[in-house]
Length: 124
Ligand SMILES: [Zn+2]
Image (cartoon, rainbow, N blue to C red; front, side, top):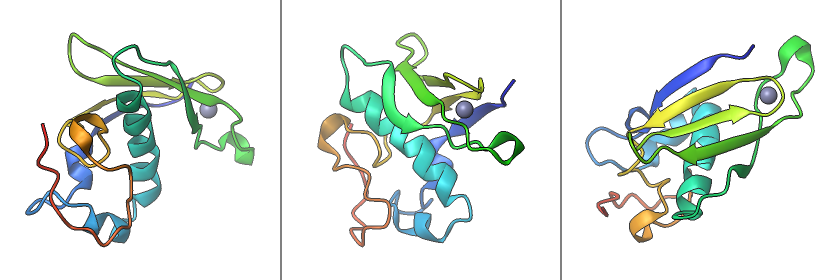
């Protein structure tokens, strides 16, 4: 079985500005991009939702890259985004994503993780 990741997307943002600039310096960039892609997909497909994302699994169990695809949806009760890999069972829960630049809700612009645009994402 895979791991269960419980992630608060705000941890990937600059505390002062809420901007994405510091993201590029983080060792966890790959993870941030992975989770960010899931958030972007889910919020982009509201309100109906589309389980089958365009995000592929990032795990490489036994040094063989997992060929699974990520399925994700918004849990309307909790507001969390829950996801899992169709193959290895890696799964997780994402919260704190609403005010991040990954959210496509409220007109935030895409997941330009390494953009020099440092405007805070203030939309709600
Ligand atoms: Zn997998």
